[in-house]
Length: 94
Image (cartoon, rainbow, N blue to C red; front, side, top):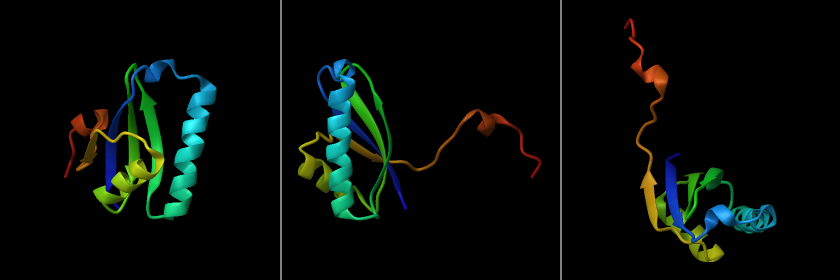
């Protein structure tokens, strides 16, 4: 199943309290439960004015539907094509 990165522009996201983040998370999870197991929230990263979310979903439209139902911004949605990390630099003996 494809993995996506969603960029959500939210002013002062980095200033959200733990209670506010919990409320947003609960709302998101409730909508995801209603949508079924084909769409999953993996994790999110909060910066000063944005939240970057990692989702597994069958298609981009599922991400958009989740955002619309939750009134969450989805300013950018990009499908992950591959992942790299420091071990990518290692020489393979193949």
